[in-house]
Each structure stands twice: as C-alpha cells, then as structure tokens.
Length: 321
Image (cartoon, rainbow, N blue to C red; front, side, top):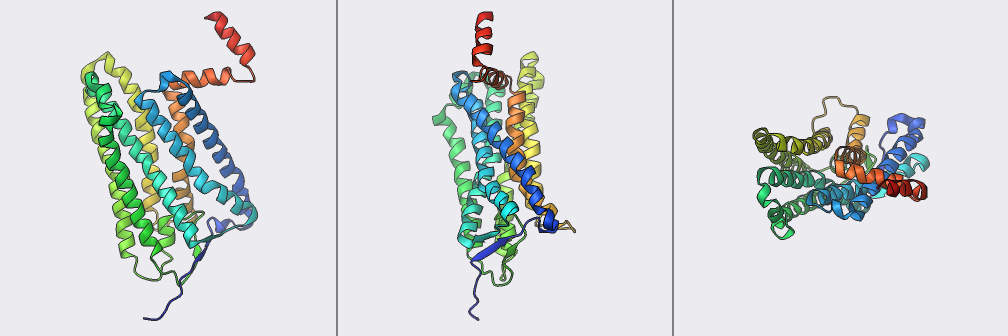
C-alpha cells in the first residue's frame, strides 16, 4: 500500500452556509451560554447551601446541574471565537480530546435520569426501605456499572476515530468535534466506527430510555393503587418525565441525523447536534427549579434575600416569622 499522509489539522466549518451572516450567531449562542451558566450555578448553590435539600433526589439533580454546566464550557467558548474572529482550526489531538470530554459528560445525562428513576421507584414502590436502598454503599451497585459502561464505550469509539486516516478533505462541517462529523472525513473503511457508534447509542441513551420507561410503568401502576399519597409522588415523577422526553428525543435525533440523511440540510444536522448539548443545559435547571417545590422555594428565598435586597426583604421576612 502507498504511504498516505493523514491530516493533523482540521477546519470546523459549521454554519458556513450563512456566509457573512455567520457572526450573527454569536448573540443567540452567547445568551444560551449565559442562561445555562447562571441557571445551573444558582441551582447548584441552592442545593449545596441548604441542608434540607441534601436528599438523594436533590443530590442527583445537582449532578445533572454539574453535567449541564460542564457541557457548554467544552463547546460554546470556542464556537463564539469562531463566529467573531473566524478561528476555525483544531488539531487532531485537540479534536479527539474535545470529542472524548463532550461525549463522556453527555453520556451522564441519560445515566443520571436512570438513577433518578431508581430513586422514584424506591421512594414510591418500596417506601419502607427507601433510605436503606438509597444509602451510598448499596446504591454504588447501580452507579459503578453505568460509569464503567460510559467510560468503556466513549473511550472505544474515540480511540477508533483516532486511528483513522484522513487523506482527503480536512474540513469538518460542524462547530465542534462530533464523532460522526470526524469519521465521515476518513478515506478508509469506517464500518467498525459506524457499528461501535450505533452500539454506543443503543447501550447508552436507548437502553437507558427502555429501563426508565419500564421503571415508570411500574411506578405509575403503584401510584394508581396508592390513592392520595401517590398523587403527590406523581407530581415529582412528571417533572422527570418531561426532562427525560425532551433530553432523549433531542439526543436520538442528533445521533441519527448523521446516519439517516434523507436530504437533511447540513446546517440542520449541525443545529440539531448543537442543541443536543445546549438546550438541555438551559431547560433542565429551569424545569427542576419551577416544578420541584422545595428547590423553587429556596431559589425564591435566595433571590429575594440576596445581597442587594438582603437588608430589606430578609428583615421583613424575619419580622413576619
């Protein structure tokens, strides 16, 4: 075989169809980044600072906030620089590192939803044993296997992508190093990469969705038999179902958009996979903050008793109490 030189530098060319209007994208993506950082930081601060929120479910919500806080930081700052200053270059090593961090952290979006479903299952279906089963030593048997799964699957497909030869184009039609956006630039066979990518989709978001769906079927069956006590628990479950539906729908559309083309415009694929990272980061803390009563009350108290109005609002609250 001939000695083929492989590209070590790539150009991230997402939304190039916009031409001179591409810098306009800076504003909406900057707003989404600001909303994500502020909302998730506030949610984390409230949960960490309030001892009454140190329940297993609130800790899992805090874990989701960490994921939602981290994902935009791996993607958006580089995108903003690209929109403003047309900085589009990235090395192969930098691309693989970014890909690994993005996909690894993103894999915990569905994993945390699985742990939340388990929490609701234990709380509603086996309430007498809830604290025992949610204790960390026993809950580790649900944590460790899923963490190991995420590490193995993400490391595997990123490593396989790094072994490909890129001897044709080095222009990636994306705003960050998405797995299939890089793989489709390879000049050799990518069958293994496609199979491992599909296997990862099945073993992570799809398998998690099947497990979550099955657990909530059992939960709803238990709620329907439990009367008024179950109605209150149902409100908590609906919050998680909303997050599950939105997050996993966007994730599956983003993953499949590179495999089922059907004339889908390139800009639409880039937009979909970008929203897969950004929209849940903005949506999740808002929906948890609004629909989770305990968290909502503490957020309102934190905002009204902040430094700027602390002397007025908090003194009035104390006098009423």
